[in-house]
Length: 75
Image 1 (cartoon, rainbow, N blue to C red):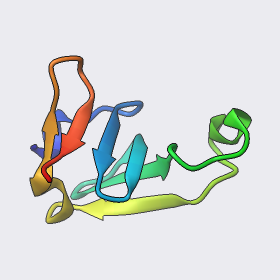
Image 2 (spheres, helix red, strand yellow):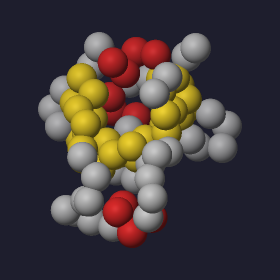
Image 3 (tube, rainbow, N blue to C red):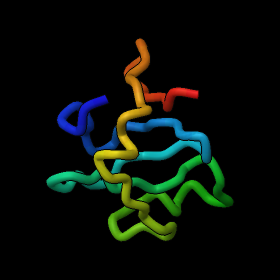
Image 4 (cartoon, rainbow, N blue to C red):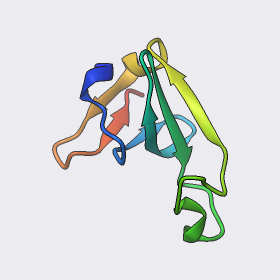
């Protein structure tokens, strides 16, 4: 999947779980992990009560958008 195809709020899956895009940089996607949590209010933000993680352009090559508009990582 291309960097330009991401939008803030998009959800995508990687080998480590489900994520939500919170910001888009020049060559990066910043996301919060939404599959492991105790309280959905942690995702209200910014600022978020969970750590944001950075995916660079090399990480994005294994992601693909699904028919329902979500994104999944190649397995």
